[in-house]
Length: 547
Ligand SMILES: Nc1ncnc2c1ncn2[C@@H]1O[C@H](COP(=O)(O)OP(=O)(O)OP(=O)(O)O)[C@@H](O)[C@H]1O
Image (cartoon, rainbow, N blue to C red; front, side, top):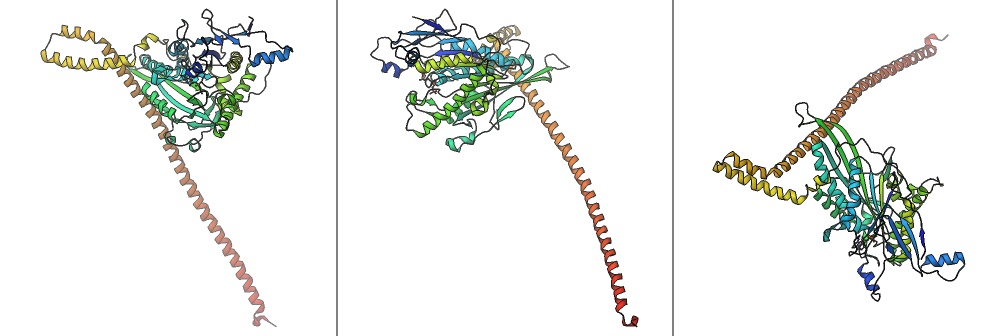
């Protein structure tokens, strides 16, 4: 067998888009269709000893061979061939029994913490899943919550919300907001807009994409919901998912027919210490805004694959999905080419326009390429595409210096698990009951202290909660102070405008008066002259004056 290598270099250095490839297990329908085979081998191999390598088996009957034969003018296929690729990370999810099998949790552990670190350091981040329909994009990004199999997106948000609590000890308040849109038939629809609930796609208002001269393209008037805790996120996600466009294709019962983009925005405000006490919260000193875009693209397959012929809506969808993916391909082609410095056609599709900064600008970007283990043509296309993407560079810069002086302590964050918090809440109740009992029985302070020691966790937790509340209080005061200032400025301006108006109005009235008097005078003069002329005429015709 011959192994052809595309590129042996590691593209992970610098600001290249990080490329990850995941292969999913066989689906029930694929197993049923291949019942006659004792073993169904995956076309993809990811050798455990080489974590960045993907090997693709090229079947004898593939179009790859027929085309190659045509070019080389030969009639016989040389047998099976293999093609080798190298990426930043490979994720083997084909067979649960393999040692290097990787589920969503392990996948998250490989990349998730790095993404969360970046966004807290002030970088804009993008995580995007690409692949043909039913290759596992939604499974990877969202997971299957009903089976408690969380995908990368909920895990990322959970860690962001945990880190937000840890930052309280650094006197940093972190406001977290979420927006959720879909791009369907080249139009942006807001999935968090409650006014859209129950509306058909054609009746949902379309949002416009505009471009800010510094921060780049943004979606105008998109709903941004504040997340106070992880439950807020799951609630918004569930509501948004209900509004999302899905349909059954022959390859996936619940196929996403739109591109979905969740954006989580962080606004971190660093407070100084109070002059009176180190532990008290002082004035706001710095502010930093960053975001993470989480993108689940619609399937990249060709129309014939999904058997949607004859279904007009599906065909339109397919061509629009393909339009944005084709433009994405063209952008990637230009961006990855060393020689071609052509204009990148971001504006040719809504998707690429929104992702402009993430494809080549101020962003740390990650693309996950999901592949099927048995569909050679699509998998081959996807891997070649991924290979191209890994050479694209972005120019990420932290939006401001890192606010936190401590790195994220992942162990500390784990302690904040919801279960632990629930447990602590129960302990608080029991502690209160016990305290009351102690007071009643007038126990010695020693035994009380011993008992208190047991509950130090509870006390720590309560302290943290208290600090968080203090923060939020301080932050809200700051916001309300800013708003009061704005109102004062508006009032001052209104006063200024009123005075100006009064003075101009006065001037206008005196001008009018002057004009009136002037006109009157002219009229008087005019009539006076007329009168004189009339008198002299009368004199002429007076019979007394005739000879
Ligand atoms: N890593 C995996 N482990 C187990 N099952 C998986 C995995 N990846 C995908 N699947 C299963 O494959 C099927 C298709 O996956 P999914 O819906 O995520 O595909 P998709 O690429 O998002 O498709 P579409 O583009 O049509 O929305 C689902 O039934 C899912 O449960």
